[in-house]
Image (cartoon, rainbow, N blue to C red; front, side, top):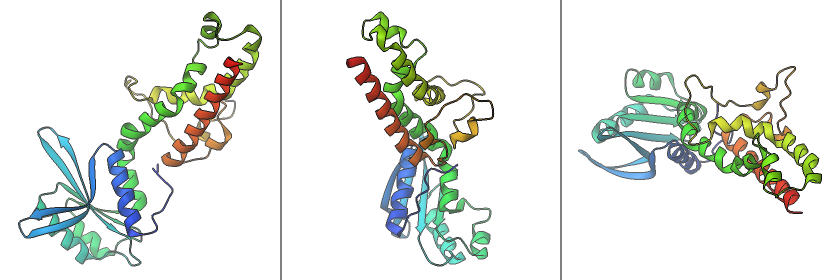
Amino acid sequence: MLITRSTPEAWQELEEAVELILRRSGLQAERGRVVTTVRGQVAVDVLASQPVGRRAFTIACECKHWKTRVNQNVVHGFRTVMNDMGADRGYIISTVGFQSGAHEAAHSSNIRLRSWEEFQEDFEEDYFQEYVRSKLNECLDCLFSYCEPISPMKFLATGKLAEHKVDEFLQLKAQYADITLTCLPFFEGMPDRTGRQRLELPLRKYVTPGSDLRYPEELLDIDAWDQFLDILCEVGETGCRKFRELVAR
Protein backbone atom coordinates (compact mmCIF):
# COMPACT_ATOMS: atom_id res chain seq x y z
CA MET A 1 0.00 0.00 0.00
CA LEU A 2 1.33 3.44 -0.88
CA ILE A 3 1.93 6.39 1.38
CA THR A 4 1.35 8.88 -1.42
CA ARG A 5 0.35 8.88 -5.08
CA SER A 6 2.27 12.11 -5.67
CA THR A 7 5.39 11.75 -7.80
CA PRO A 8 8.30 14.13 -7.09
CA GLU A 9 8.96 16.33 -10.11
CA ALA A 10 12.55 17.31 -9.27
CA TRP A 11 15.45 15.99 -7.22
CA GLN A 12 14.79 18.49 -4.45
CA GLU A 13 11.20 17.26 -4.14
CA LEU A 14 12.38 13.65 -4.05
CA GLU A 15 14.79 14.38 -1.22
CA GLU A 16 12.12 16.31 0.70
CA ALA A 17 9.60 13.50 0.25
CA VAL A 18 12.08 10.83 1.39
CA GLU A 19 12.98 12.90 4.46
CA LEU A 20 9.31 13.42 5.32
CA ILE A 21 8.48 9.72 5.08
CA LEU A 22 11.41 8.81 7.31
CA ARG A 23 10.47 11.45 9.89
CA ARG A 24 6.86 10.33 9.95
CA SER A 25 8.05 6.74 10.28
CA GLY A 26 9.67 7.58 13.61
CA LEU A 27 13.24 8.32 12.54
CA GLN A 28 15.31 11.45 12.93
CA ALA A 29 16.05 12.55 9.37
CA GLU A 30 17.93 15.39 7.73
CA ARG A 31 18.54 16.45 4.13
CA GLY A 32 21.98 17.39 2.88
CA ARG A 33 23.74 16.18 6.00
CA VAL A 34 27.52 16.63 5.80
CA VAL A 35 29.33 13.71 7.41
CA THR A 36 33.00 13.45 8.26
CA THR A 37 34.47 10.12 7.16
CA VAL A 38 37.96 8.62 7.10
CA ARG A 39 38.36 10.10 3.58
CA GLY A 40 37.06 13.55 4.43
CA GLN A 41 33.64 15.19 4.35
CA VAL A 42 30.76 13.93 2.25
CA ALA A 43 27.18 15.21 1.81
CA VAL A 44 24.42 12.62 2.14
CA ASP A 45 21.12 13.36 0.37
CA VAL A 46 19.10 12.16 3.36
CA LEU A 47 20.53 10.73 6.57
CA ALA A 48 18.27 9.14 9.17
CA SER A 49 18.80 7.40 12.48
CA GLN A 50 16.78 5.50 15.03
CA PRO A 51 17.81 4.36 18.52
CA VAL A 52 18.26 0.59 18.80
CA GLY A 53 19.28 -0.38 22.29
CA ARG A 54 22.27 1.75 23.25
CA ARG A 55 23.24 2.73 19.72
CA ALA A 56 21.74 4.43 16.70
CA PHE A 57 20.74 2.52 13.58
CA THR A 58 21.77 4.75 10.68
CA ILE A 59 20.19 4.87 7.23
CA ALA A 60 21.74 6.79 4.34
CA CYS A 61 19.67 7.62 1.26
CA GLU A 62 20.83 8.59 -2.21
CA CYS A 63 18.02 10.16 -4.26
CA LYS A 64 18.30 9.97 -8.05
CA HIS A 65 15.75 11.95 -10.05
CA TRP A 66 17.46 11.20 -13.34
CA LYS A 67 16.33 10.62 -16.91
CA THR A 68 18.50 7.50 -17.14
CA ARG A 69 18.64 4.38 -15.03
CA VAL A 70 21.19 4.23 -12.23
CA ASN A 71 24.35 2.28 -13.15
CA GLN A 72 26.76 0.16 -11.13
CA ASN A 73 29.27 2.99 -10.67
CA VAL A 74 26.76 4.87 -8.54
CA VAL A 75 26.28 1.80 -6.37
CA HIS A 76 30.02 1.23 -5.99
CA GLY A 77 30.53 4.86 -5.01
CA PHE A 78 27.69 4.74 -2.52
CA ARG A 79 29.05 1.53 -0.98
CA THR A 80 32.35 3.30 -0.37
CA VAL A 81 30.58 6.19 1.34
CA MET A 82 28.48 3.78 3.39
CA ASN A 83 31.55 1.88 4.57
CA ASP A 84 33.50 5.04 5.35
CA MET A 85 30.73 6.54 7.46
CA GLY A 86 29.68 3.28 9.10
CA ALA A 87 26.04 3.43 8.05
CA ASP A 88 23.93 0.37 8.81
CA ARG A 89 21.75 0.49 5.71
CA GLY A 90 21.62 2.41 2.48
CA TYR A 91 18.88 3.19 -0.02
CA ILE A 92 19.31 4.39 -3.56
CA ILE A 93 15.94 5.68 -4.70
CA SER A 94 15.54 6.11 -8.45
CA THR A 95 12.54 7.51 -10.29
CA VAL A 96 13.38 5.63 -13.51
CA GLY A 97 14.97 2.39 -12.32
CA PHE A 98 18.35 0.65 -12.33
CA GLN A 99 20.61 -1.05 -14.83
CA SER A 100 21.26 -4.76 -14.33
CA GLY A 101 24.83 -4.01 -13.28
CA ALA A 102 23.54 -1.87 -10.43
CA HIS A 103 21.55 -4.78 -9.03
CA GLU A 104 24.61 -7.01 -9.29
CA ALA A 105 26.75 -4.42 -7.49
CA ALA A 106 24.23 -4.14 -4.65
CA HIS A 107 23.76 -7.90 -4.26
CA SER A 108 24.66 -9.26 -0.80
CA SER A 109 25.28 -5.74 0.49
CA ASN A 110 23.44 -3.48 2.92
CA ILE A 111 22.28 -1.27 0.03
CA ARG A 112 18.73 -1.51 -1.25
CA LEU A 113 17.78 -0.31 -4.71
CA ARG A 114 14.25 1.02 -4.74
CA SER A 115 11.82 2.83 -6.99
CA TRP A 116 9.87 5.67 -5.38
CA GLU A 117 6.91 3.35 -4.86
CA GLU A 118 9.05 0.51 -3.47
CA PHE A 119 10.70 2.87 -0.98
CA GLN A 120 7.26 3.82 0.31
CA GLU A 121 6.29 0.17 0.69
CA ASP A 122 9.40 -0.51 2.79
CA PHE A 123 8.35 2.11 5.35
CA GLU A 124 4.56 1.93 5.09
CA GLU A 125 4.10 -0.18 8.24
CA ASP A 126 6.21 2.17 10.38
CA TYR A 127 4.48 5.15 8.76
CA PHE A 128 1.12 3.71 9.74
CA GLN A 129 2.12 3.01 13.33
CA GLU A 130 3.97 6.28 13.93
CA TYR A 131 1.97 8.79 11.88
CA VAL A 132 -1.32 7.48 10.52
CA ARG A 133 -2.60 6.34 13.91
CA SER A 134 -1.99 9.77 15.46
CA LYS A 135 -3.72 11.45 12.49
CA LEU A 136 -6.75 9.17 12.91
CA ASN A 137 -7.04 10.53 16.45
CA GLU A 138 -6.67 14.09 15.25
CA CYS A 139 -9.21 13.73 12.44
CA LEU A 140 -11.92 11.75 14.24
CA ASP A 141 -11.62 12.28 17.99
CA CYS A 142 -14.30 14.99 18.04
CA LEU A 143 -16.59 12.99 15.78
CA PHE A 144 -16.25 9.92 18.00
CA SER A 145 -17.66 11.83 20.96
CA TYR A 146 -20.92 12.12 18.99
CA CYS A 147 -20.84 8.68 17.34
CA GLU A 148 -19.92 6.42 20.26
CA PRO A 149 -22.50 3.74 21.13
CA ILE A 150 -23.96 5.62 24.13
CA SER A 151 -24.88 8.63 22.00
CA PRO A 152 -27.31 10.34 21.92
CA MET A 153 -28.31 9.13 25.41
CA LYS A 154 -25.41 10.88 27.13
CA PHE A 155 -26.42 14.19 25.54
CA LEU A 156 -30.04 13.69 26.58
CA ALA A 157 -29.01 12.77 30.12
CA THR A 158 -26.89 15.89 30.52
CA GLY A 159 -29.51 18.16 28.97
CA LYS A 160 -27.32 19.08 26.01
CA LEU A 161 -29.74 17.63 23.45
CA ALA A 162 -33.47 18.33 23.31
CA GLU A 163 -35.80 15.35 22.82
CA HIS A 164 -37.17 16.69 19.56
CA LYS A 165 -33.67 16.68 18.00
CA VAL A 166 -33.00 12.98 18.59
CA ASP A 167 -34.12 11.81 15.15
CA GLU A 168 -31.92 14.36 13.41
CA PHE A 169 -29.03 13.39 15.68
CA LEU A 170 -29.46 9.72 14.77
CA GLN A 171 -29.49 10.57 11.07
CA LEU A 172 -26.15 12.32 11.45
CA LYS A 173 -24.81 9.44 13.50
CA ALA A 174 -25.79 6.97 10.78
CA GLN A 175 -23.85 9.11 8.30
CA TYR A 176 -20.60 9.23 10.29
CA ALA A 177 -20.56 6.33 12.76
CA ASP A 178 -19.22 3.62 10.45
CA ILE A 179 -16.10 5.48 9.35
CA THR A 180 -15.42 6.58 12.92
CA LEU A 181 -15.88 3.16 14.50
CA THR A 182 -13.91 1.43 11.73
CA CYS A 183 -10.91 3.66 12.47
CA LEU A 184 -11.31 3.68 16.26
CA PRO A 185 -9.33 0.48 17.02
CA PHE A 186 -6.32 2.02 15.28
CA PHE A 187 -6.31 5.33 17.18
CA GLU A 188 -2.94 6.11 18.74
CA GLY A 189 -2.88 4.81 22.30
CA MET A 190 -5.49 2.12 21.79
CA PRO A 191 -4.25 -1.17 23.31
CA ASP A 192 -2.76 -3.68 20.91
CA ARG A 193 -4.71 -6.89 20.50
CA THR A 194 -3.12 -10.10 19.30
CA GLY A 195 -4.25 -10.89 15.79
CA ARG A 196 -5.83 -7.49 15.21
CA GLN A 197 -5.90 -6.70 11.52
CA ARG A 198 -4.52 -3.54 10.00
CA LEU A 199 -6.72 -0.84 8.55
CA GLU A 200 -6.35 -1.28 4.81
CA LEU A 201 -7.13 0.89 1.82
CA PRO A 202 -9.23 1.33 -0.20
CA LEU A 203 -12.22 1.17 2.13
CA ARG A 204 -14.39 -0.23 -0.63
CA LYS A 205 -12.95 -3.69 0.11
CA TYR A 206 -14.88 -3.66 3.41
CA VAL A 207 -18.19 -2.93 1.67
CA THR A 208 -19.01 -6.48 0.62
CA PRO A 209 -22.37 -7.65 -0.81
CA GLY A 210 -24.89 -7.63 2.00
CA SER A 211 -22.80 -5.25 4.11
CA ASP A 212 -24.65 -2.35 5.72
CA LEU A 213 -21.51 -0.27 6.22
CA ARG A 214 -21.89 3.36 5.17
CA TYR A 215 -18.69 5.23 4.39
CA PRO A 216 -18.41 8.71 2.86
CA GLU A 217 -18.33 8.20 -0.90
CA GLU A 218 -15.27 10.42 -1.32
CA LEU A 219 -13.18 8.03 0.83
CA LEU A 220 -14.14 4.71 -0.74
CA ASP A 221 -11.55 4.37 -3.51
CA ILE A 222 -8.52 6.20 -2.12
CA ASP A 223 -5.51 3.88 -1.85
CA ALA A 224 -2.77 6.13 -0.45
CA TRP A 225 -2.49 7.42 3.10
CA ASP A 226 -1.77 11.09 2.48
CA GLN A 227 -4.86 11.70 0.35
CA PHE A 228 -6.98 9.50 2.62
CA LEU A 229 -5.98 11.44 5.74
CA ASP A 230 -6.52 14.82 4.07
CA ILE A 231 -10.08 13.92 3.09
CA LEU A 232 -10.75 12.08 6.36
CA CYS A 233 -9.88 15.23 8.31
CA GLU A 234 -12.28 17.23 6.13
CA VAL A 235 -15.00 14.63 6.78
CA GLY A 236 -14.28 14.77 10.51
CA GLU A 237 -14.40 18.56 10.64
CA THR A 238 -17.62 18.73 8.63
CA GLY A 239 -19.33 16.06 10.71
CA CYS A 240 -18.27 17.56 14.01
CA ARG A 241 -19.50 20.99 12.92
CA LYS A 242 -22.91 19.56 11.99
CA PHE A 243 -23.27 17.85 15.36
CA ARG A 244 -22.22 20.97 17.25
CA GLU A 245 -24.65 23.14 15.32
CA LEU A 246 -27.47 20.67 15.98
CA VAL A 247 -26.79 20.50 19.70
CA ALA A 248 -26.33 24.27 20.00
CA ARG A 249 -29.45 25.46 18.24
